[in-house]
Every structure is written in C-alpha cells, then in structure tokens.
Length: 185
Image (cartoon, rainbow, N blue to C red; front, side, top):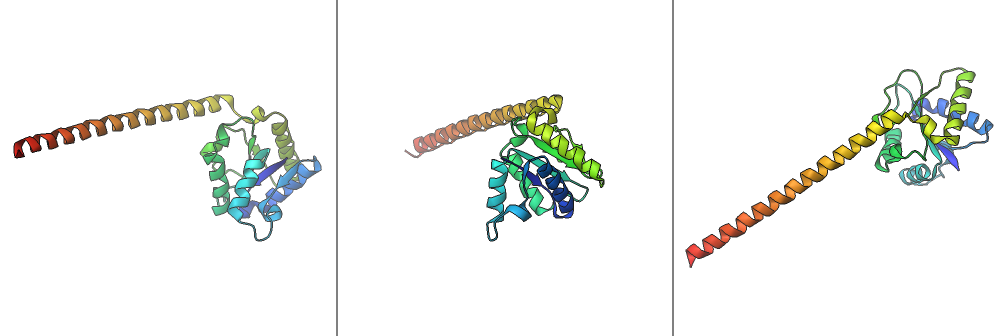
C-alpha cells in the first residue's frame, strides 16, 4: 500500500520532500507527476490512486487548490472518505492557509522550510498510518456526522413533502378533469 500525496503545483517541492522523508521510513508514496504513466488519463489515474491509497496526505499552502488539487479533494468528498476513520486523511499545512471544510475534523501537521519540520510531519503521517483515529478530532467528527444525519433527515422530509404535494396536486387535477367531463356530458 501507499500514501497518496495531494498537492498543488506551487507546493510540489514540499510534496517531494515529504515523499522522500516517508520513503526514508519505508512508506511508499504516490505523486501524480512521478507515478502516473505517460499518456494515461490523469483524472482516471488520480481517482484510482486515491481509492487504492492506504492514506491521503494533503499538502496545503496559501496558494493551494489549483484545478488538479481541487479534483483530488472532490474525489475524497464524493466518496466520503472524510467520514471513514479507517483511511487516514492528513492535512499538512505550509504557512497559514485556509483548511478545506472536509478536513476541518482532522488534526493538521505543520510543514516548514527546515529539514526537521519535514521529518516531524513524516513522523506524524507514520503515526496516522499506525493509528488512523489519532489524526481525527473526535468531537469534530461527531459534529460532522450529526450535521450529515440532520441534513439527510431534512432532505427526506422535504422529499416526502414534495411527494405528498404532487399526489394532492395530481388528485385535484384528476378531480377537476372529472368535473369538466361531467359538465360537458
């Protein structure tokens, strides 16, 4: 298994440094620019790599969120990996960026320009692989799950209301047509 490293092009140097530190700890990593076969469909390759990864590390800097990284984030959100404690999602922040909402329940690691900072971030990722729950803030996770349940409940209620209104409306229309037929005959 490997760790997928999500990064914007502007943060590539941090992603490669982190990949090297993880390799020093016998952790295989996947970087699109290095591991995607030439000529392969980028979207398909990245989606598959995220799905098959043991963990996803997000290198997030102030200039993060380019088109490619947004696609990677979308894959994590659409498959709801952010609610799955068995797949570690580790935000690694560079500077003082805004952390995307789906990662707010994860405990971020800091990555600076020093070799020691990169070593500490790699150690944190290794710990997350050993104990996936360690990178999650349990209170925030429960709040996120509760909000999701409430949103789904509201959606079900709304769908039920729409269905009931459609039945009533259809019944009134059918009744109205029946009245018209009676008046015509």
